[in-house]
Image (cartoon, rainbow, N blue to C red; front, top):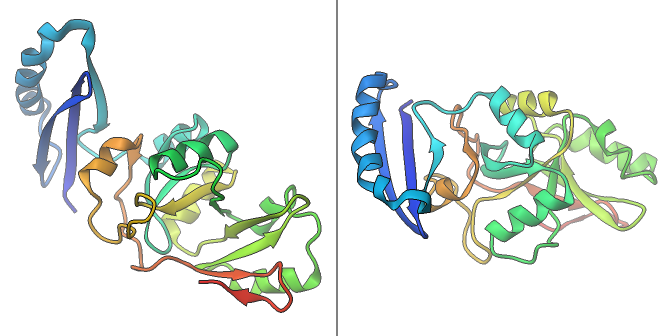
Length: 228
C-alpha cells in the first residue's frame, strides 16, 4: 500500500497543499527539499502563517491514535462496515463530529464498544431479551438501539481486527459515523482531500471489509424492529 504524506499551509483560510507520494517514505533530505521551498515562500507571512501537519511520511500508529482520542481528537479510521469518522464517546466530541458533518450538534451517534460490559453504566434496564439480541448479533456489523435510563443509544461490537485492537487499547466507547456532509452519500471508497484536511488523523493501515453502512435493529420496541 502506498505511503502518503501531505502538509497544508494555511494563510487566513487560503491553503497551499504539498503532496508527496511514494512507495516508501522518502529520505529526510528529499522530503525536506520538497517542503522547504513552500515554507520559504510563505515565511514572509509571519504570524499569519501556520503549519498544520495532517499526514506526514507514514500513517500514525495505533498508539498515536489512542493518545489522540484521549485528547478529544477526531479522525478517519476503517470500521467494520465502511470508512468511519471516529472520536471518543463524549458530548464535546459528539458536537465536534456533528459540526464536521454540518448537522445538528446534538444528533445521536453510534458507539463502538469492545464488550457489552462497557454499556452497563448507561444501560441499566436491560432485559433477558436484550442480552439475547446482543449475543445473537454481536460481534458483527449490526447496530442495536438499546434502552437507557433517559432514552436510548445506538451501539455495536465490531468484528474487525484493526477496530478491535483500537477499542481494546482505548478502554472507552468510541463514536463512529459515516464520512459525509449531512444529506450526502457516505464515502465508501476514496476519501476526499477535504475530509482528510478537516480531521486530526487518518489511518489507512487496513481497508473496511464492506461498502455499506451497518444494519440497525431497534430493540427498545416490542417486537424488535429493523430500521435500516
